[in-house]
Structure formats: C-alpha cells, structure tokens
Image (cartoon, rainbow, N blue to C red; front, side, top):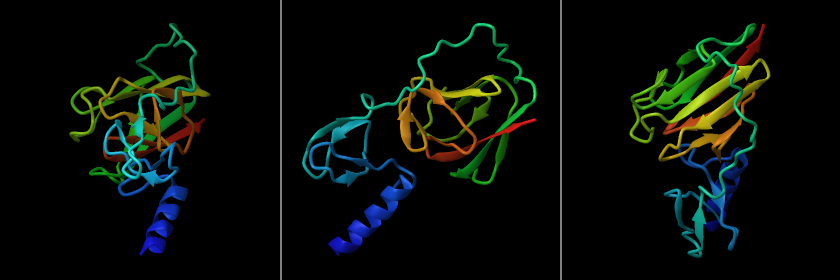
Length: 174
C-alpha cells in the first residue's frame, strides 16, 4: 500500500500537481510531499508550519510603463487563453487589450467559481516580448505553472490556475 501511494505521489509530483491541479509542495522539515489545504497551515506529516504567501514568486520588479494604452494590444501580436480544465474546458478566449482583468464578477473574463476573487488577476501585455500575469491581491492566489505568483513574466504555453480553472496562455507573433 505504501509503495503504491509513493508511486502515485512521485508521478503527480513529476507533473507538478496532485488531484485537480492543486499544488503539491514538500515540507521544508520532513521533506514529505503534501497538498496544502490553505495558504497558511501545517504539514500533515510532521506539523511544521508553512506560509505560501511568504513563498510567492515575484520574478519581475520592473515598473509598469506609464505610456501603455491599456485598451489596445501592441501591433502584430495575437494572445488568447485556452481553458484546459474546469467548467469551461475547451473554450478559447481572445485577449483583445493590453490589460485584461480576470475575476468572478468584475473584469474582461468572468469565471463563475467561488474560489475566484471579484477581481482576481490581470494579464498585462506591455510589448510583443513583455507579457505578465499579476495577482490582484486575490484570496486564493494566482498560480503560473503550479507556482504561486504575484507578478511574473508569461510565455507561450504557460499554464495559469485561477480558482479551479486551468488555462493555457498562447501568443502568436505576426
């Protein structure tokens, strides 16, 4: 039984997720993998505390340029999201402006999910080669490739998790 459980954990860990794309993390103390129930909590194996807010990745500290017209995309670029799980799996949503808000009740893309904040995240497209995802201080966080982020650069093929929905980010340079 233990051998089978370890095989499942190892397989899921290689893929970077476990059960419904929840992030699988390793305890810093006992090194055992587990699925966090909350953003702040304790390892179910040894009781060591964790705080996912403190371990959030913020790769880009650059200032947002003030010259961007948020209502239009930069020239010669197409950007879209493809839902790969959740209620809207298979749906494609075209991003048609430089600041695209995702939320439960407010924004350009509405995701009807209690795990999504009113205004959850923004996709910001500064230029053809500078695209970012920014968490808008959401309650449950924004994940990029299964890592909790505040603001980080996006590239074609990245997987965004907001609430229970997984979306693949696509970019086509024309």
